[in-house]
Image (cartoon, rainbow, N blue to C red; front, side, top):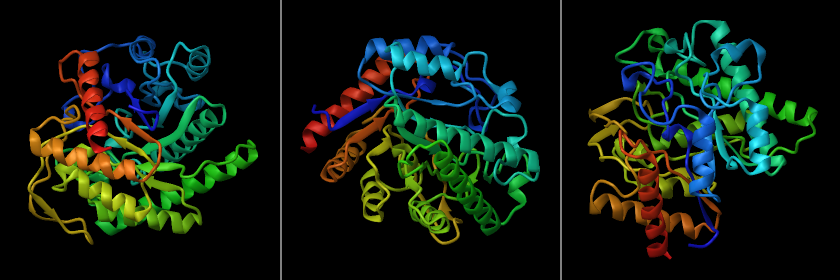
Length: 359
């Protein structure tokens, strides 16, 4: 396998983390607790691979008023930087602020009726994006920042909050929130004399779970990116397709990858995993489910699910390689009680076989 393709083993796949509603509780049991141990295992097992993590849950925030939400198992930001510089920890592919596991966000984050929650959302995302940009400027990371809407969805099973909004009202709130965040990031980077590396944000869209998402199809994800980019006046948004999300929305990985490339939102970064393909039809204009039901992404390893799933993913890899972009495959997998090292090794091995076959 040549250097055109790199792998990332996210720290969250190895240990317990604060969870959103799909897991039915606040903590996933099992795995490796302290992040320090997880990062050292990643570096020892695959010295050249990258990793990613959640601010708050894995990497502690440095914003004083929000430090109370830092997990006791997290690594302080300064310690993380020193660990990467010394070679103890792997370089960072991506960071994200998860809108779950924090008190109050079950009623929405950007769409929350509480202005304090909306301010926290704004502050944490601006800081998180600037941290990824700083890491890249120092040669310690790839500068990728992931946003998954999570609780900003039409929740069917938990709470009300944003669920009382119309789809268009919520959509408009999300577009404005992210245009404002991107503008604030660009202003801060200018003050800190860091040349921005565009895009700034990678949208990880999903059909459902913990509720029907507002950005729940490929077409709607592309439209969202275009609307924010137009408001900012720069191409600040791109797409991070998760293969399982494409499948649980009723589409193939190949088709979703093709659409992303054709829209100009493929950067080389994606979440590699697998899932059952759902039978569902969603209105691209309104986001309404016309028939069927979105699936639940259980984050299987790459290639799992039979020959049809394998062939589909291999075709998608072929499309990616044809772009000539450096590929970063982040294995967003859930070992679900299996040995996480063996599970990641299998996922990684399968993707390498697909790359080899696609060339």
